[in-house]
Each structure stands twice: as structure tokens, then as C-alpha cells.
Image 1: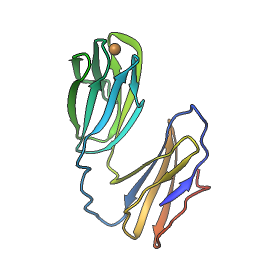
Image 2: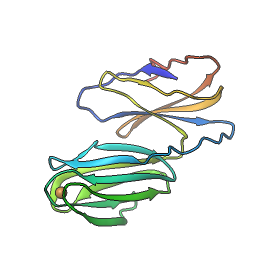
Image 3: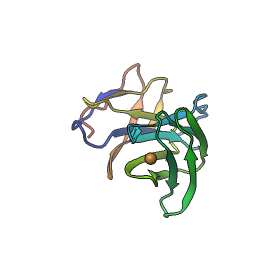
Image 4: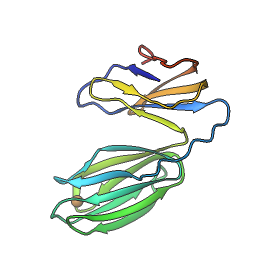
Amino acid sequence: MSGRIEARPGGPTLVVTLDPHAPLDVPLPAEPAEMDQYGRQFIPRLVVVREGQTVRFINSENDLHNVHVIDEAGESLFNVGMPVIGGTYEHVFERAGDYRVGCNLHQQMAATVRVTASPFIGIADRDGRFAISGVPYGVYDVEVRRGARRVTRVVEIDGPLTDISGMW
Ligand SMILES: [Cu+2]
């Protein structure tokens, strides 16, 4: 599946997810997703992972930070100090939702970990282009989301290229 969806430079990231109508066993990625701390920012500002996937937080600079993660109910999931230059902390996110990530030492540091039940995730680039490969033929709910706005559609994947340009 691929396409180009309207994107605004600097705007919130466009995320495309695919949910199969028939049950599909898609293994989790072997490597954890990563969110870095550098220049007193989280990089990237949005990490999208599947339920059960690990996120590795990294502090790449000579500046003390912590990682404070809060769920949608406002409950603190964890709050850990990060050693300078190479400090890491890993967490397995089990439940779908948007998690706010902050650093108590630097109020401007803000990011999101989005956890999705969908086995297929696509992140659009600056031009709004994205591609999700290795999708078995079948019928899927496709969701395109940017910030709070979402659009959904049912799409049948039945060939080597399914383009959803124009859906957004
Ligand atoms: Cu910090």
C-alpha cells in the first residue's frame, strides 16, 4: 500500500494504519523503536509502535534528562532519570493509546508514543508520501490520522500496488 496524502511542513505527523478484517498473525518488529534525547528535545516527537513493542529511550547528550510517561487517563506510567551520553531505558507498551512523554527538568521537551493495535503502520514523509510493504491480500480498515483528525475507509488489497492518494 502506498500513496501521497496532503502534508504541511512542520505540521503534526501523518500516520497511516491498517487493520485486517480477517485475523492475521504479523510478528512484532525484532528491534525496539527508539526515541532520542538531544538538543533538549525528544527526537522524533512522535513514535508509533504496536501493542507489545518495546521503545528504547536514549540520552545522547551531556545534559541530564528524565523520561516521564503519562497515559491517556493522566496516570504516570514511569519516570526515570537518564544518565548522560548513552543512557538508555526500555519499556514495553502493552496497551493501545497515546502516551505523553516529558522531561521534568526541561518543560519544552514534549513528545508522544502512540501505541496501536494495528499490525501495519506507515509514517508519511514531509511530502506526505508513505509506503507500507509486505501486506497480505485482503480487506483492511485504513485510518489516516494527523493530530486529532482521522479519516477511515475500507480498502481491499488485491494487487502489487494499492494507492490511497486522495483519501485524506
Ligand atoms: Cu531534559
